[in-house]
Image (cartoon, helix red, strand yellow):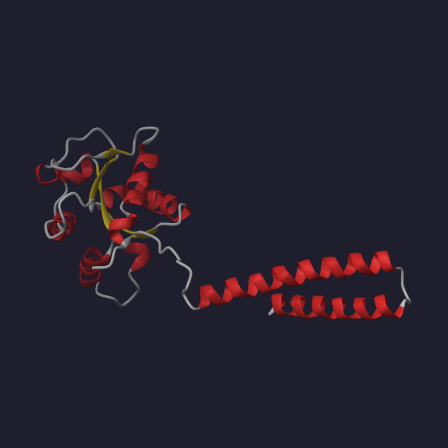
Length: 203
């Protein structure tokens, strides 16, 4: 709306300037300068309107964020929350149970649905995670099951270590990123960004 108003005002200024030019009431140099400036403004206004119209009609590509499920054990919750915040800063779409499950929803069902629809699963590992049992292990199995149905070479499960703990047997086939090292998060971000073309390709 603002762009349309600017375009209308610019056109009106051009018209008034032309009247003044031929009427001889004002300095012609100033009138000519006003006309040129108004033409430029109206041109940019038209371009802006066309761009906004194209975006609204989805003619221009709008890149959707990569969705990432954060698989972790309860003992690592504080560090995973920090990872969640960092991924949000990088304009990714992390999925964390405490943040993504609404009150009243069945958490087990929502976790299963999330793993089925996200673009990647980051399995956060530590000594405490390796020693834990329960639903954390179930999440890993769900992620590996989905990964087994994907094309060869597609990155989906990304082990991310918080310490030097050894990878559990089911994850040893995957190269891990070490978040406890200086460049760990940057490597994780580059990995997630690299899967964008494959994750967003039409199925």
